[in-house]
Image (cartoon, one colour):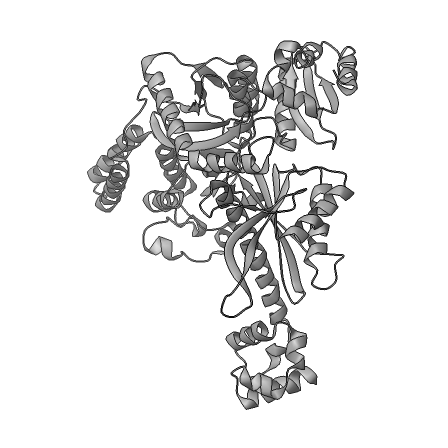
Length: 611
């Protein structure tokens, strides 16, 4: 046993036996894992026991631990809440982490307004004044238009509502009752809102029954125009919902059905779990949400609990959550969700036939999604083999430099999770300490800035666009920060033309890795190379897009704007041809004419730029 490991074990003897949360950190101060425990001392000691130390995942974790911290809480519920918040804030490498915090859209109704309107939102903010409906996974815009048209609700902004002096076109075509100019009473408008709420809640039978009664009353009172409008509303609702069958007709609650697919009977270290949540609202299946999460140091029971903790920090909490198996701290998590929702929430382990059918549906859909993603996973596994990485790289970041003759340089950083771009984690860096066209210095500066930010979780692999020189620049930055990190670079090979006797771009890609003289060459169809090329090309696209945007802005602010007869396309053509404003300013009369513009326009440009 190493001296460092023995020090950690000795430190644990002084830990308290109360409930709380423990945090494991590596040498760089990065949080590796966050966990909760009924007894902090007993839980952390279990990681160093012989039986647990024999497992690959515990062996890997223990080897990386440099520091242990704990926070004592009064109750297990407080520990559960603190663990959930810390995981969401720090995104530890070995905890289950959802792909992102993006949410499906909801409809929200704000009752603080006398004439509320339905809005589409993605972030849920619990408030007694707000009523949410959903989530929806497709067609939300079309559904929004259907609600506004069928129930004649306003869709204008607050400023337009306040300043409207006469009805808008929606009133004229019969899709709004114009509450902005008092064409409808607040009581009548509230009835329209209540009908729309019944529709969004999935209470089709109740809504249609009420509308048919209204139609009969209108007809009996000889209000035939009103009766016709109600009839059209009934037809529209029936047509939209005619193909929708109830999947749980006996359930009039909001239910989330959780499915999880794992490739084996026991969880494997680094395995990617496929989760699928079915949204059942008042008996009808309204949508689904798929999530992926890599297994850290959890059992399946712990994985279910951790997933639910994180999922319901970004998703609306239903009345019931159905799962297929029991898991630790289910009642504590149930209490936590009830506190968040300010109402009774149940987490149910269902065993009867109908619920098991829905749970089976969630599992089968999760399995299909996992099988579809097998090819992407193979790319990452193959890449780990080629680069001798300790584990499959889930998170990959790519860096590329874009500049043209030292003008408007930009360095892009893109982030891929499980082979797919995660655009919420893209970044653009503008070099601060580099003069001239020096790609090596720019890469070194950006790597320093990126990896100095310890609050931003490090990727599993850093990819640099370029050859050995670019790779060495990035390694120099990591050395300065005293960090060791999995890194490589990717560059196209150059070949010599047999006819022109000069270098031309070849199609072969070369992978450069630290401490290896010769690059790695793979066939174009190799899964590992396909993944690297995809990251590199996306970094190049993102950098080029930024560079073009900055160059266009510089052109818009240039003296060329003041030249009469010089159009936008000609300006862009000149800047692309000469590269910079300085080069354009130094161009001769003959060079300008040769670019394709008239002699008179060439003379104007010379007079404008040279004064």
